Amino acid sequence: MKTRIMLLNILFLLSMVGICQAQETKKGRLEADPNAMPLIKYLWYGFDLLDIRPDIEGKISVDVTATVQSKHIWHGIDLLDDHGVFLPAVGVTLGDTGFSGKHIRGYPLSNDLSNFKQSVYALFYTGAFLKDTRYATNFTTNYIYYGRPEIKDRKSDCQEFGTTFFWPKLIAVGDGYITPSYYLGYIWASRSNSNISGCEGFIHVLGLGYDFEIPDFWPGEKKQAFKLFGDITYNDGYAGSAIEHDWSHATLGISTDFKKGNFTISPSLNYQISMEDSVNDENELWCGINATYRF
Image 1 (cartoon, rainbow, N blue to C red):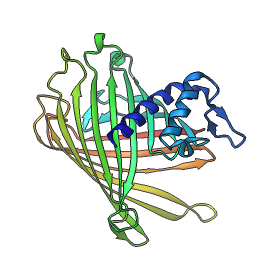
Image 2 (image 1 turned 180 degrees about the vertical axis):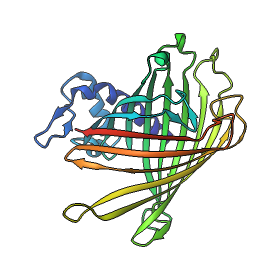
Image 3 (image 1 turned 60 degrees about the horizontal axis):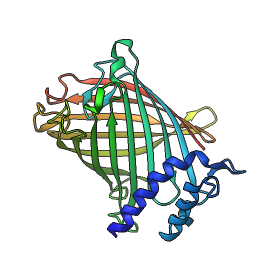
C-alpha cells in the first residue's frame, strides 16, 4: 500500500509538468495526449500499471482562478495588516483518482508591501469511507509549500501537512444537513537556517457548514443557494514561537455562487473574533470575490 501511494505521488508530480500538453476535446474538456511528449507517454504507462488510467483518461480538468480580498487573513493572522491581496491560481484535478494540485501567487494590493509576495504549491488527496451510513466521512489530505520569492535563499519558506475530515450526513436539519468538520495541520520551516525557526506547531480547526436556498430571490421565482460556515481554532504553537498555545480565534462567514457554463463568480463576507493577542489582537471583517473558469 505504501509503495502504491508513493508511486501515485510521483506520477502526480510528473503530470503537473506535462499538463501543458493536454488537448481540448470537442466537449471543451482537456484530455491528455500520451504521444505528445515522451514524459507523458511513459506517465500513461505508469497509470496503466497502477490500474488508474481509466479514472484519468479524458477526465483531467484545469481551473483558473482569480481572487481579490480586502484583507489577507491566514489561520487568524492578518498577514498584510489590513491591506488587500490579489490571489491568482491554477489547479489541476486528475479525474476520479482523488488527486489534485494547485499553484497560488499572492500579490499585496499596496506598493509598500511588495516584499510580501507569496508563491504557494499545494497537493491534495480526497477520499471517503462509510459512504452509505449516517457516519459517512469525507477527507482531504494536503501538503502545502509556502514560498516567499522576495526572501533570499528561501529562508522564510515553510511547509504544512494536514487532513480535513467532513461528516456530511451526521446532523440532519429539515431537508438539508449541518456538516461538521475537523482540520489537523502541522507546519515547519523549510530550512535549517530559517529566519522563521520556531514556527513548528500544530493547529486544530473545528467547523460547521450549512447550505440553504432562498426561494424567489431573483425575479421570475428563481432561487439562490448560500453557504453559511463557522469555525473555531486552537493554535498549538502553529506559525510562531511567540504564539500562545490557546484558542486563538473564531470565524463566521457566508458565500454564494453565480454560475454560467464553466464560469463561476463567488462573493463572500467573513468576520473573525480574535481571542488570543499573540495571534491577532483585533477582530477582523473582510470580504472577497473569486472568479473561476474550468476547462
